[in-house]
Image (cartoon, rainbow, N blue to C red):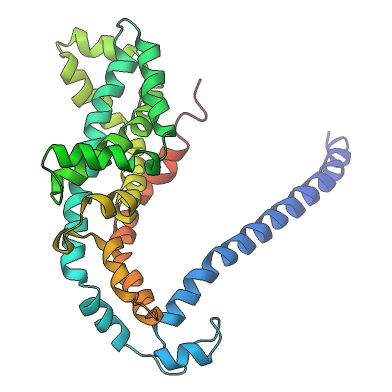
Length: 291
C-alpha cells in the first residue's frame, strides 16, 4: 500500500521547490519596494535632525553627526502648528464622519431601494469623481464668496464634502450590494424600519469599508492644499499644509525646519492608521471573494 505513495512524493518535490523559489523571489521584490518607499522618509528624518549648515555640507543620505533637536521647537513655533493643527483637526474630524454618513445614506438608497433613473443617477454621481479639483477652483471661490462663507469652516467643509461624496458613494454602494438581502427580509419580519435596517444591520456589517474610507479620507483631507489656499485667505484660519509655507522665504528655504514640521504633522495620520488598521486590509479586499 505504501509503494505507490513514494513516486507521488518524489513527483511533488520539484513543485514544492518551484513554489519556494517563487515565494523567495516575491519576498525579495517586496523588500526592495519597501526599502525604496522608505528611502525618502529616512532622508526626511536625517534632514530634520541636522543644523542648516550641516545640511548644506553633507549628503542627504548621511546621518546627522549631532542631532539638532532645536529644529522641532523652531518648527512648532515658526510653523504655528498649534493653531494650524487645531484648524486641520477640526475640519478633518468634522468633514470625514459627516461625508461618510451622507454617502452611506445615498449608498443605502442605491443598493437597497428601487426608484426611477436609479442607475443613471448613480453613474452621474460617480462621474463627479473624475472632475479635477483645479478645474473647479474658480466656480468654488465665486460660490463660496456669494454665500458669505469665505474664511469660515463651513466655506471649506462644503467643497470638501462635495468632492468626497462620489468616491464614497461608489465604494459603499458596491459593498452594500454584497450584503445578502435575506437579512433585509428577516429584519423587516422582526419589525425593523428602513432606517433601522440601515443603522442596525447594514452599518455594523460595513465596518471594514467604513474604516478604510475613514483612513483614506482623513489623509486626503489633512493634506489638501488647493481648495484651502483659495478659501482660507485669513492666516488665522489656515490648515497645516498652508502653514508649511511659513518655512519658505524670498531667497531661501528652511529645509530642516520644514522637514521637522512635516514629521510633527503626520503624527495624527499615523495614529488614525494604527487605530483603524485592523479593518484596513479587510476593507480593501471587501467583495473580492464574494459572488
